[in-house]
Length: 260
Image (tube, rainbow, N blue to C red):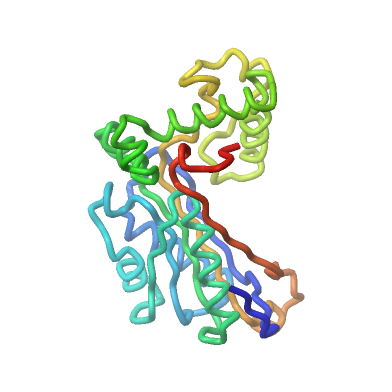
């Protein structure tokens, strides 16, 4: 789909809750708080719509209708609200939906929230919940989970391109380095190449620093057709979204023409 009406989309407000292993807030409270903070940052009282990116609330928090729940607990009460699920890309998909709402002319200003509350006493249930983003018949139902699938994909990539087993090392090192610049990040620890190579091997070529943690967190942005200068009369230091694209692939690895 192409939209060429020329409307600009600006990020005029942002917020993020500290990422924690276990938040004391409910998923509704997390969402409402981060939405409110983003609106405050933008200098706005409300917005035309709310788009929430989330994958696991129905499975781990027993809460569907998440966008409506968050919207009615926040300043966007009574407005249109949608929950968007695209596995690990849910937040990005929600951002794209918010951008398209403005580009289409249906909305002037929207809030986009990405949120997950993953902590659960039953770790097996968390693993199964995450695995529902795989192809059920060919992967999940055959005993695969996201760790084993990613390990299989990583090994295939290393074998195909004849790379050493630590070829993915810099992803984890860079992520920990970036975390040092964000006080809301879960891990505040620099890791070295030696730390990586000595870390526990968890599946195939993947080590502990290759795996994402299970945690609770939320972030939100306010998107608007207006710039910061137009909204608040201040120098326009906001981010302008100049492009967005999206495509899908076969979910199951075995069904992909070229998995690497």
